[in-house]
Image (cartoon, rainbow, N blue to C red):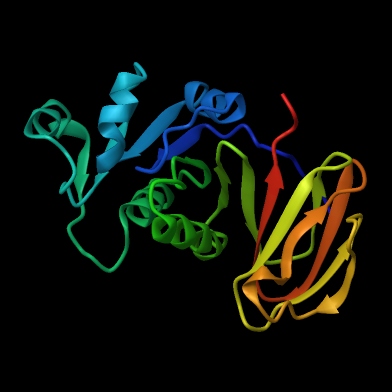
Length: 215
Protein backbone atom coordinates (compact mmCIF):
# COMPACT_ATOMS: atom_id res chain seq x y z
CA UNK A 1 0.00 0.00 0.00
CA UNK A 2 1.24 3.48 -0.85
CA UNK A 3 1.32 6.14 1.86
CA UNK A 4 -1.29 8.89 1.65
CA UNK A 5 0.49 12.23 2.34
CA UNK A 6 -0.76 14.69 4.93
CA UNK A 7 -1.77 17.05 2.12
CA UNK A 8 -1.41 16.35 -1.58
CA UNK A 9 -0.50 19.18 -3.98
CA UNK A 10 -3.44 19.07 -6.37
CA UNK A 11 -3.86 21.53 -9.25
CA UNK A 12 -7.61 21.96 -8.74
CA UNK A 13 -9.25 23.63 -5.74
CA UNK A 14 -12.99 23.68 -5.15
CA UNK A 15 -13.91 26.57 -2.83
CA UNK A 16 -17.16 26.22 -0.89
CA UNK A 17 -19.00 28.93 1.04
CA UNK A 18 -18.02 27.98 4.58
CA UNK A 19 -15.21 29.60 6.57
CA UNK A 20 -12.62 31.07 4.20
CA UNK A 21 -9.24 29.35 4.80
CA UNK A 22 -6.75 31.01 7.14
CA UNK A 23 -4.39 28.20 8.19
CA UNK A 24 -1.10 28.38 6.21
CA UNK A 25 -1.56 24.87 4.79
CA UNK A 26 -5.04 25.68 3.51
CA UNK A 27 -4.01 29.10 2.20
CA UNK A 28 -1.06 27.55 0.37
CA UNK A 29 -3.36 25.01 -1.29
CA UNK A 30 -5.52 27.89 -2.51
CA UNK A 31 -2.68 30.14 -3.62
CA UNK A 32 -0.80 27.37 -5.43
CA UNK A 33 -3.81 25.95 -7.27
CA UNK A 34 -3.63 25.93 -11.04
CA UNK A 35 -7.39 26.47 -11.18
CA UNK A 36 -10.13 27.38 -8.72
CA UNK A 37 -13.69 26.15 -9.09
CA UNK A 38 -15.77 28.42 -6.88
CA UNK A 39 -19.24 27.80 -5.46
CA UNK A 40 -21.30 30.91 -6.16
CA UNK A 41 -21.67 31.94 -2.52
CA UNK A 42 -17.89 32.09 -2.03
CA UNK A 43 -17.08 34.42 -4.92
CA UNK A 44 -16.93 37.62 -2.84
CA UNK A 45 -14.43 36.07 -0.41
CA UNK A 46 -12.31 34.75 -3.27
CA UNK A 47 -12.16 38.14 -4.96
CA UNK A 48 -11.34 39.81 -1.64
CA UNK A 49 -8.31 37.50 -1.45
CA UNK A 50 -7.16 38.77 -4.86
CA UNK A 51 -8.02 35.59 -6.77
CA UNK A 52 -10.47 34.72 -9.54
CA UNK A 53 -12.23 31.46 -10.42
CA UNK A 54 -11.81 29.47 -13.59
CA UNK A 55 -15.36 28.25 -13.13
CA UNK A 56 -18.22 29.58 -11.00
CA UNK A 57 -20.82 26.96 -10.09
CA UNK A 58 -24.19 26.85 -8.38
CA UNK A 59 -27.85 27.77 -8.51
CA UNK A 60 -26.83 31.48 -8.46
CA UNK A 61 -28.99 32.30 -5.45
CA UNK A 62 -25.98 33.72 -3.57
CA UNK A 63 -24.29 35.88 -6.18
CA UNK A 64 -24.67 39.59 -6.88
CA UNK A 65 -25.86 40.86 -10.28
CA UNK A 66 -22.46 42.53 -10.74
CA UNK A 67 -20.55 39.29 -10.22
CA UNK A 68 -23.00 37.42 -12.41
CA UNK A 69 -22.30 39.84 -15.25
CA UNK A 70 -18.54 39.94 -14.64
CA UNK A 71 -18.12 36.17 -14.79
CA UNK A 72 -20.85 35.37 -17.31
CA UNK A 73 -18.34 33.55 -19.53
CA UNK A 74 -17.38 31.05 -16.83
CA UNK A 75 -20.64 30.49 -14.92
CA UNK A 76 -22.20 27.03 -14.79
CA UNK A 77 -25.77 27.59 -13.63
CA UNK A 78 -27.03 24.31 -12.16
CA UNK A 79 -30.46 24.96 -10.72
CA UNK A 80 -31.41 21.43 -9.59
CA UNK A 81 -31.87 21.08 -5.84
CA UNK A 82 -31.04 17.38 -5.49
CA UNK A 83 -27.42 18.22 -4.59
CA UNK A 84 -25.64 21.14 -2.96
CA UNK A 85 -23.29 23.57 -4.69
CA UNK A 86 -20.20 21.70 -3.47
CA UNK A 87 -21.34 18.50 -5.12
CA UNK A 88 -22.25 20.38 -8.29
CA UNK A 89 -18.72 21.83 -8.38
CA UNK A 90 -17.04 18.46 -7.79
CA UNK A 91 -19.17 16.80 -10.47
CA UNK A 92 -18.25 19.54 -12.91
CA UNK A 93 -14.58 18.85 -12.20
CA UNK A 94 -15.04 15.13 -12.78
CA UNK A 95 -16.89 15.81 -16.03
CA UNK A 96 -13.95 17.91 -17.23
CA UNK A 97 -11.44 15.21 -16.30
CA UNK A 98 -10.21 17.05 -13.20
CA UNK A 99 -10.09 14.09 -10.85
CA UNK A 100 -7.60 15.29 -8.21
CA UNK A 101 -9.24 17.95 -6.06
CA UNK A 102 -8.65 19.88 -2.85
CA UNK A 103 -11.86 21.14 -1.24
CA UNK A 104 -11.57 24.31 0.85
CA UNK A 105 -14.16 26.34 2.73
CA UNK A 106 -16.42 23.34 3.31
CA UNK A 107 -16.65 23.64 7.10
CA UNK A 108 -17.75 26.34 9.53
CA UNK A 109 -20.67 28.78 9.67
CA UNK A 110 -23.35 26.07 9.96
CA UNK A 111 -22.92 22.67 11.56
CA UNK A 112 -25.43 20.99 9.24
CA UNK A 113 -23.45 22.13 6.21
CA UNK A 114 -20.20 20.97 7.82
CA UNK A 115 -21.52 17.48 8.59
CA UNK A 116 -23.14 17.16 5.19
CA UNK A 117 -20.00 18.20 3.32
CA UNK A 118 -17.81 15.82 5.35
CA UNK A 119 -20.19 12.95 4.61
CA UNK A 120 -20.18 13.82 0.90
CA UNK A 121 -16.48 12.96 0.73
CA UNK A 122 -17.53 9.31 0.79
CA UNK A 123 -19.67 9.95 -2.31
CA UNK A 124 -16.73 11.45 -4.21
CA UNK A 125 -14.22 8.70 -3.45
CA UNK A 126 -15.25 6.61 -6.47
CA UNK A 127 -14.78 9.54 -8.86
CA UNK A 128 -11.20 10.55 -8.10
CA UNK A 129 -8.71 11.75 -5.50
CA UNK A 130 -10.49 14.28 -3.29
CA UNK A 131 -9.21 15.77 -0.05
CA UNK A 132 -10.84 18.35 2.20
CA UNK A 133 -8.49 20.79 3.93
CA UNK A 134 -9.72 22.93 6.83
CA UNK A 135 -8.04 25.29 9.25
CA UNK A 136 -7.57 22.34 11.61
CA UNK A 137 -6.60 19.39 9.45
CA UNK A 138 -7.26 17.30 6.36
CA UNK A 139 -10.05 14.81 5.69
CA UNK A 140 -9.89 11.92 3.25
CA UNK A 141 -12.50 9.33 2.35
CA UNK A 142 -11.26 5.78 1.81
CA UNK A 143 -12.93 2.67 0.44
CA UNK A 144 -9.94 0.35 0.78
CA UNK A 145 -7.04 -0.32 3.13
CA UNK A 146 -4.74 2.72 3.29
CA UNK A 147 -1.50 3.83 4.97
CA UNK A 148 -1.60 7.45 6.17
CA UNK A 149 1.34 9.78 6.73
CA UNK A 150 1.27 11.08 10.28
CA UNK A 151 3.48 12.26 13.16
CA UNK A 152 3.71 11.29 16.80
CA UNK A 153 0.87 12.82 18.80
CA UNK A 154 -1.20 13.76 15.76
CA UNK A 155 -4.91 13.73 16.57
CA UNK A 156 -6.84 11.35 14.32
CA UNK A 157 -10.55 10.59 14.00
CA UNK A 158 -12.41 8.11 11.82
CA UNK A 159 -16.07 8.32 10.82
CA UNK A 160 -17.94 5.34 9.45
CA UNK A 161 -19.89 6.22 6.31
CA UNK A 162 -21.51 2.88 5.53
CA UNK A 163 -23.23 0.25 7.65
CA UNK A 164 -20.99 -2.60 6.51
CA UNK A 165 -17.67 -1.10 7.71
CA UNK A 166 -15.09 -3.46 9.23
CA UNK A 167 -12.01 -1.62 10.47
CA UNK A 168 -8.59 -2.62 11.78
CA UNK A 169 -6.24 0.13 12.98
CA UNK A 170 -2.48 -0.12 13.38
CA UNK A 171 -0.09 2.61 14.51
CA UNK A 172 -2.64 4.52 16.60
CA UNK A 173 -2.85 4.84 20.36
CA UNK A 174 -6.16 2.97 20.42
CA UNK A 175 -5.95 0.07 17.92
CA UNK A 176 -8.97 -1.78 16.57
CA UNK A 177 -9.38 -5.29 15.23
CA UNK A 178 -12.14 -5.77 12.64
CA UNK A 179 -14.44 -3.33 14.41
CA UNK A 180 -17.77 -2.39 12.79
CA UNK A 181 -17.67 1.10 14.38
CA UNK A 182 -21.36 0.81 15.15
CA UNK A 183 -21.85 4.53 15.86
CA UNK A 184 -20.49 7.63 14.13
CA UNK A 185 -18.46 8.78 17.16
CA UNK A 186 -16.78 5.44 17.86
CA UNK A 187 -13.66 6.10 15.76
CA UNK A 188 -13.01 9.63 17.00
CA UNK A 189 -10.31 11.07 19.27
CA UNK A 190 -7.46 8.73 18.49
CA UNK A 191 -3.75 9.59 18.27
CA UNK A 192 -0.92 8.64 15.91
CA UNK A 193 2.16 7.00 17.42
CA UNK A 194 4.66 7.65 14.65
CA UNK A 195 5.24 8.61 11.02
CA UNK A 196 2.44 6.44 9.60
CA UNK A 197 -0.65 4.55 10.63
CA UNK A 198 -2.67 1.94 8.74
CA UNK A 199 -6.40 1.63 8.27
CA UNK A 200 -7.33 -1.86 7.10
CA UNK A 201 -10.81 -1.74 5.64
CA UNK A 202 -12.42 -5.02 4.67
CA UNK A 203 -15.64 -3.39 3.50
CA UNK A 204 -17.43 -0.06 3.58
CA UNK A 205 -16.21 3.54 3.52
CA UNK A 206 -14.60 5.82 6.09
CA UNK A 207 -13.75 9.50 6.39
CA UNK A 208 -10.42 10.00 8.18
CA UNK A 209 -9.42 13.30 9.85
CA UNK A 210 -5.76 14.16 10.59
CA UNK A 211 -4.81 17.39 12.29
CA UNK A 212 -2.21 19.73 10.75
CA UNK A 213 1.38 19.71 11.95
CA UNK A 214 2.01 22.30 14.68
CA UNK A 215 3.06 25.66 13.28
